[in-house]
Length: 188
Image 1 (cartoon, rainbow, N blue to C red):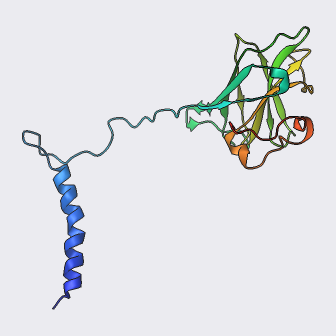
Image 2 (image 1 turned 90 degrees about the vertical axis):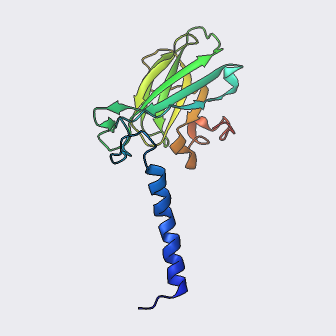
Image 3 (image 1 turned 45 degrees about the vertical axis):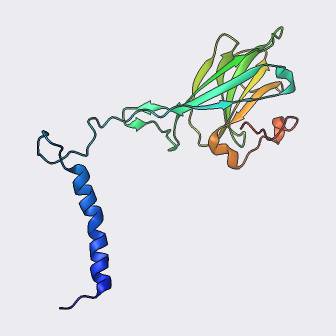
């Protein structure tokens, strides 16, 4: 059987990667000659770093700043999911420079992007961050001034807002209670 020069050339070049791998995996002098192990020592994965998002202030916030961090909630099976099958996120919000308001407490909220569902994550102050858990794919985190920490719904006094990374494709931030505030911010 006669082979074409092209076939021989292709055969030669296809052997080079195999030769290179065998040279790279060959034991050095003095090392045991068993088969090299490409498996890691541990199969445990490191938890991904939290996503840190600077929240957009409203005019009421003055020079105050707020940041929220989100990370996947853990479970015995790796990552936690809600009954609806959405990832669960641990969310922590912290503020600095928040002005004092007589008769008001600042409350952190999380809501779906269409504002149909929401949860009160709790009160926040300059020296006390708030943490909670959110089980939606797309959501908004915001801070309002309320008369009570146990408010069932938010007032119109917004101080900060931010979108979850998955909400940036479509947002309701320019509608409803958010319509008087900037719809887009370069930081988010």
